[in-house]
Length: 124
Picture 1 (cartoon, rainbow, N blue to C red):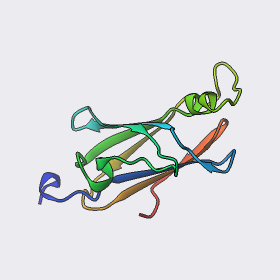
Picture 2 (tube, rainbow, N blue to C red):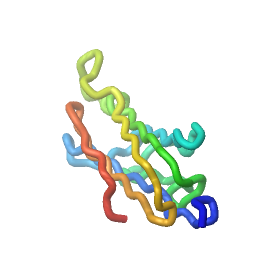
Picture 3 (tube, helix red, strand yellow):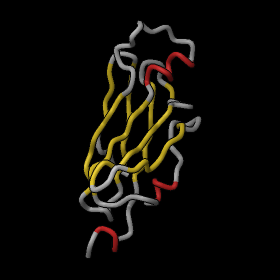
């Protein structure tokens, strides 16, 4: 079977502002597929519980390939009244990852502060 013939398990994202111990409500997220062709897959903001709610979570638009997710960390903190240096140490957190087994679910937990972040494939 090819990647296009297999139902996608989807990509889910959960973001937590660990500096303040809260879900990252309204954090801006951009998900792009880079290979085999560059296309924006999803764009939006995390909900009050830090989840990125989008059809991509159910597999919409997800195929085998190389992906990039970008989180607007500095904009999130500035919007929430947190003073940051100019430029911020972390303006945007960018993570590239590959999907080979399209039928599997890819959960991306994002933990961050103004000074660093952690991104990995978590359990769904």
